Image (cartoon, rainbow, N blue to C red; front, side):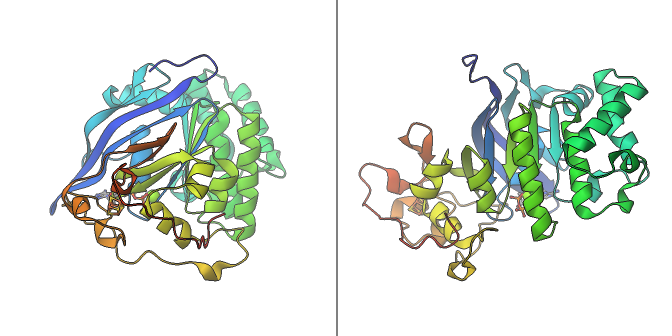
Length: 345
Ligand SMILES: Nc1ncnc2c1ncn2[C@@H]1O[C@H](COP(=O)(O)OP(=O)(O)OP(=O)(O)O)[C@@H](O)[C@H]1O
Ligand code: SF4
Ligand SMILES: [Mg+2]
């Protein structure tokens, strides 16, 4: 969908289904995900482990190995023109290097241990931006300064194993941002780091958000990071989006019992009292054979008969705030959100 100049749409994901073929059967990891991202926006994706956050994000960059994965259905329109799903690997390589960047949880898995930092940053600049070697090295130096690496000239000649975890993550960010990507995806960029370094990396990402014009998808388990950095939030459960809205709508006016449970169960880096956390009882459903009704039904204290039979549609609460829960149906009984907020803001 085309939008006005001020709100250029960077990403339009529509009814995306991604599965894995395994010996035991088909794992339906992403089951009909629809969302969008506008220029300059930061979108957070939250949800328990295994709910499909990384598969969704990596499918946007077509980084999920296929096979065993396959895109069963849906489209991912990037920059209002390209359907990522339809691109060949060769075409995708171009998009990846020049228009999208990704920061992973563990920089060591994505940095090349046999190449110096300088070579790794400059490589894609030479390949995708048509720079010569000295231009690319100058830009690499500029990027290391931007991400706050001390002694950047010296670092360019070092190998990843000679750097600390925090520095390696900064290098990953530098590589991801070197080509000025329209879209930056950060998949738990701070989880592998110690708490002080986590805070520094988040501060850096916030600064970069102001300086660059990239749109960001941020996957994180930390609600403090969500509150500080993002504009909108998607809550995923068992391969689907169960609630979406602005940060305030999700934290203060959420309508889905899973969102309530998540807000009470997830610790915040900046929370003073972590003792109020209440885990969500039970476990997510098996994605080999997801239930036909609401996937949260067997863990939900408010489950009704209809929940077991029919998967709820996404009800519009207000504007872009939507929740897939039968409690949002106009004829449903009224249920108040539990008062305790635990780790939430
Ligand atoms: N290579 C694979 N083969 C089979 N199933 C897979 C594969 N990769 C992921 N899955 C399944 O897809 C589902 C979604 O996984 P995904 O990695 O997206 O979860 P996540 O939300 O990112 O979790 P986490 O918070 O732990 O990173 C999970 O059930 C997972 O087991
Ligand atoms: S649809 Fe039913 S089971 Fe699912 S979250 Fe809502 S009330 Fe609970
Ligand atoms: Mg993940």
